[in-house]
Image (cartoon, rainbow, N blue to C red; front, side, top):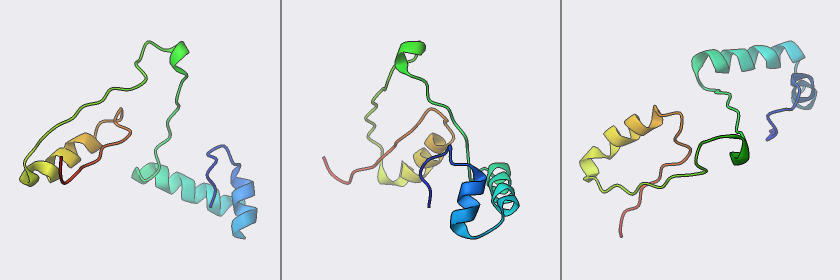
Length: 86
């Protein structure tokens, strides 16, 4: 419904037709379960971190599920994709 993470719970509640408390509780529940993770991005000029790093990995199809599971635990990973051919 909303794509701006800065939208106040009251605005979301009004748009959804529910109470602000219900929205706040839903957000708290998602944060507690790990379904919602908050992050802050910082402009490159203020950090010593690189903007991006690309890694190309060839693995057998039988290893994809294990690799997906491993990569999903790394907070730094923003995108991981698979392709079925060269």
